[in-house]
Length: 271
Image (cartoon, rainbow, N blue to C red; front, side, top):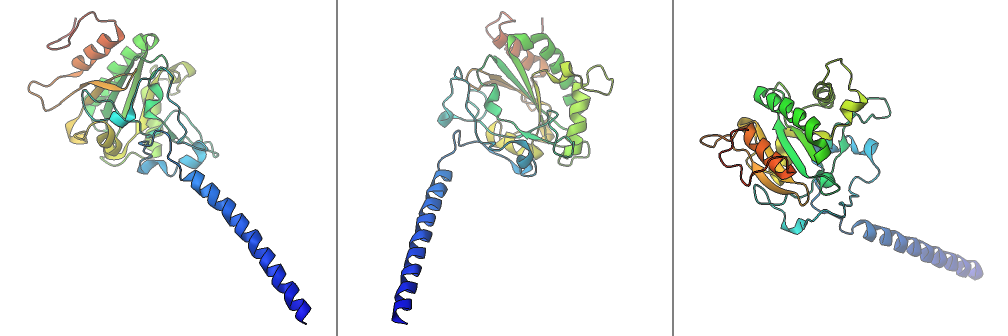
């Protein structure tokens, strides 16, 4: 009986050591998961949770282009500041396992460097008619100047009923914007334009990372970024007197691209 007790105690001891070893390995894995994520200011936003599992295995993995000169620790907001990286939800034709279009993570710095010269950002809602006018003009310029490195980002904050835009709404919005020949189908050529459509409910991420004053009550808005370092060189202000309209952002965009030979866009009213 005593022999069995000793053997039993030895078995328990060995089992405990084995569990401890497993626990040690698990602790090592947890520590590695807790390491800082590169570009730690990346923000998923509330709208990302339902689409991440179908989009990418690790949406936080992001390596900026080698020719992107950017110190994210110096990031700020507004003209004269370098805009931090964040991750809203892009609508680019990505389909889930059921064949339905769904959003996919988009790193805001994905255009930083890598041959891009200018990132032209627009805020819009489904009810903003003037924003739609801006969109058509921006796409015209995109088709003309994409070879020179122009990229356009279109941020949708509300639908036509002043509600957060649903995935169904965003899918239709994408089709309406990219279907330039109005045949009801987004062709491969139309979808290949460097035109990114993203969802940002109530412009929450936009206010956090780009412009604290951004809101649906002060649209249209546009921002021009130097793509080599994500420096904001222009932000429209609908409250300015007189306001700086679309043409001012157009001037800054063309000046940065080198297709407009002027030093300053102050007072610019078109060629």
